[in-house]
Length: 353
Image (cartoon, rainbow, N blue to C red; front, top):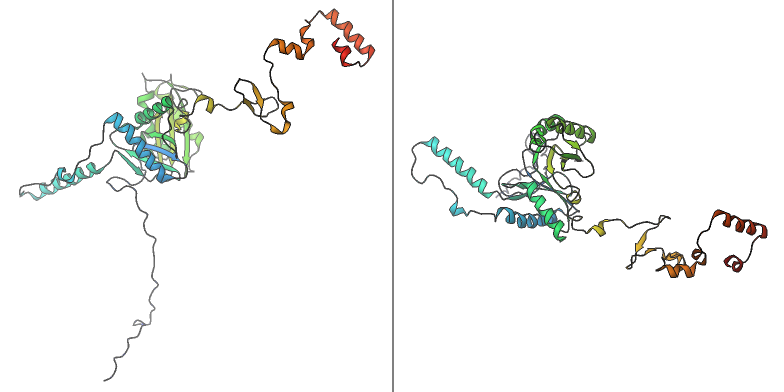
């Protein structure tokens, strides 16, 4: 029996088979519930900067926000699947009404899966955005910083700054102007007024400059009420502008200077730790001794160059006998100078006598 003929590997028509194409897998998304997966216009939340460890930053943010969120708004309520609204129990002849009800049930179940705090892709390295739902982010963050400022208790390790974001819009100058006109009204429109400053930060965006954004926003604040004044030292309100790619994040916060620019690492430090060490006249750093004396921190110069203040006036008189004699009139001083010049250099004993 003859063996079956082997089929030719070359396809009919003489055409070669194309190479297989491989595409990279899609990046895993953080948000497993309903809603958007990344920062976009129309959201509220908290913008958090960290130090090279975003995963740990998200964990610390959840722990901190849930702790103070439960304190302000009560514990978060979850609904089991058995308690979720189901479709129509009885038979419904109207198909259109049944479809509408089913769509409403799907939307309701999606809203129930949304958490109070949800991490999202921010679009920048070392920056995390936590979307908030049903709370006011500026009040929550202010409450956190106020408590940490009073207790001086450090609760985070990798989180640096925590900025509330009350509104977002497209990061184009015309869109920002239109959005800011209504966004800034609760704080600056008459009869409301106050001193203010504007802080600006841009990431992964280069089609706007800092000067033009601050100029436009300051003009809007001035047009809302002519009594609004700029104060860069200790303003009542601080307008925070954070731009990431094509999204502009806005907020108006209080106590921006007092809470060290909303930095969680700096706000827990005492006043002594935050102040720089005093410097001596030669530009070298000086240290404060336990008894309040100033001492140079230069070991190369040795102990002979250390300046120590005398403890009492008696000790000062023993070290410098000249200081004991009161200063006389000009007529008494001049003869001494003339005699010293005429006699030339003398020994130390003659000068002291």
